[in-house]
Image (tube, rainbow, N blue to C red):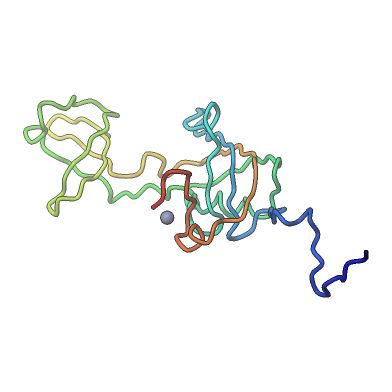
Length: 179
Ligand code: ZN
């Protein structure tokens, strides 16, 4: 018994999963990475799940996102990102001097100590003690990685299409974390 073949419905079964072959906009990328700054590993996915992000939606820093285009699952790359394409240049305006008298006694007055400060409008800002002077303490409000060259060692683990909802939201939804 021969079956009639419906014209116009030929599909390659191997492609039904529709897995993207290369990274382009609107592809969900699963990636292992190690970030080295000043020859020191400061962040890595090693020992954890790979990170996932939606390419082309600014989920990761711009310099890294640009370097991802065209990569396939299994590809490795070393990506050097200058400060301007990473966490920005050091802003010389983002420092403040406070008098030692105003400095709260419960926080150690030492260079490198990280603290949070509420500004006049009630917003909480992260800062670090940059210098302790005779009469003042200088606070640095720059991102800790501002002005730094970032060295990423990356490996693409897998690629997939986003769900409609992920595409609409512009980010990846992890199982059990709908938002
Ligand atoms: Zn969402």
